[in-house]
Length: 95
Image (cartoon, rainbow, N blue to C red; front, side, top):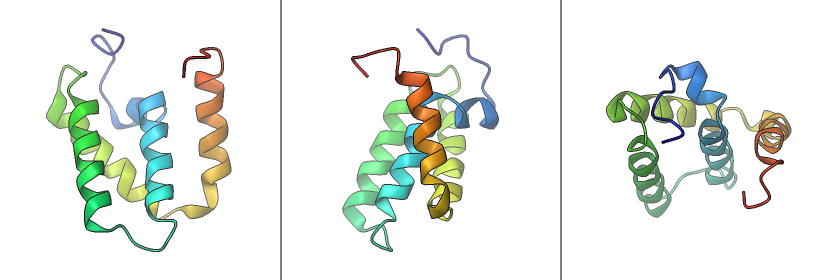
């Protein structure tokens, strides 16, 4: 329900907790230089699960794929991604 009324745009997704989590996953998956078949399958499943909570799942899934693809090629900004994610989730100890 948290995302039910969220405006769906790539920028909105990219700066949300979920978008930053996807960015971090991209960096971790690519840390060894490649993304193997199992990682790709798990990431695809993650995209499916995340996109289901939004009003336009296929649009969101496309944005998530774009974010992932862009972030896996930018290994140098991991500190920035982690810092942004920390700011968003630091008030919720369960996260």
